[in-house]
Length: 132
Ligand code: 5GP
Image 1 (cartoon, rainbow, N blue to C red):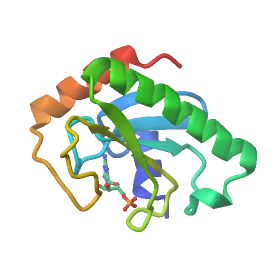
Image 2: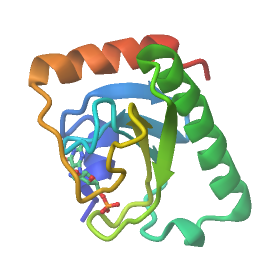
Image 3: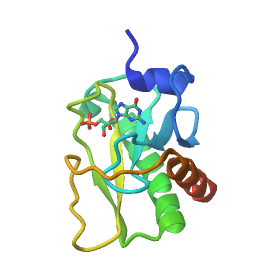
């Protein structure tokens, strides 16, 4: 059975798309820890990120770097933080979370309310700034 993220890549489940190349996909997390919280995933479905081949892990990180730079440009946070956890969805992914204030709690357990309109707007703002 394909993971929810594979269904998203295939377009069988909708997502707020940020960027895509032939091996990776980036989209907004539907339960964001901050506005613009983005997930970067390999199109190859693999559960544990450290089971990726070294070249695949490098490529995923380089893809995430380009997405994070786009987020920095679009959203102007202090910086964008990165978390890899993977206990909920068994499809390797990197969380990119903008940090807007030094006092902001930086944790996946933390959630903020973001309307669908704002999610659409955020996806557009970020995607326009990502250069792959
Ligand atoms: P982790 O596996 O690292 O704990 O986190 C999985 C993340 O995937 C969570 O932050 C969760 O909100 C996100 N997520 C789970 N299902 C979906 C979905 O269908 N769409 C999107 N955009 N994000 C999802």
